[in-house]
Length: 189
Image 1 (cartoon, helix red, strand yellow):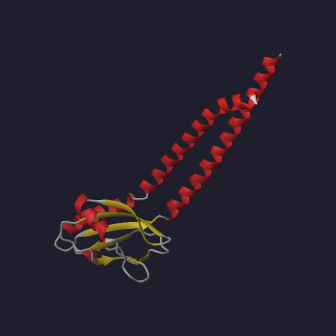
Image 2 (cartoon, one colour):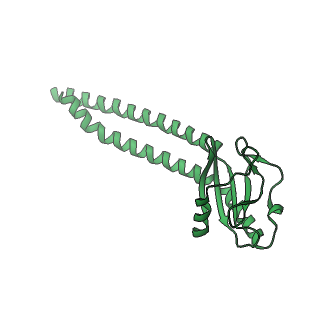
Image 3 (tube, one colour):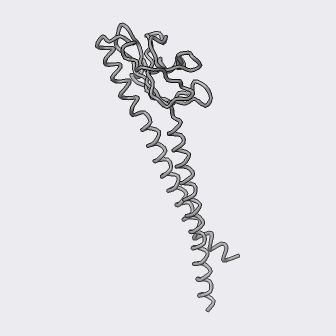
């Protein structure tokens, strides 16, 4: 029993340290993956807002082709009027232009920008950047793209971090046990 107590006393702080470091490393990588998912949309939204403010028509800024939010990884652009009604878009969901909840545009109006994970329906998640536009033609620009690949990478990162954590916990336990057994034998001699 004394051996078990000594083992836990020496191993538990190490196990806690390994756990905290593993969690911190996973969180850092996950946050880098997720925040990086916004990069193309920031450029798209800023460029479109600047063009609209300069007098461009909403339809002239929409990329060619249609993006089905349920299946495509392509970036998309939606331009709304000041009331939140779509003016132009290359994004469709069930053959309709998707519209974020009204609170999103209200927040954007008050804070000057919004970067959110938008889920218009289960299984359809996008990294989106929304900007207000100072234009008589448009009120908001929303640029987005699917998070499917980013979330796949996040899952892989979690699995790798979990496997590394288990290996480190197991190895540290075996080493702590060996050290305590060896210490006990040396004390008995």
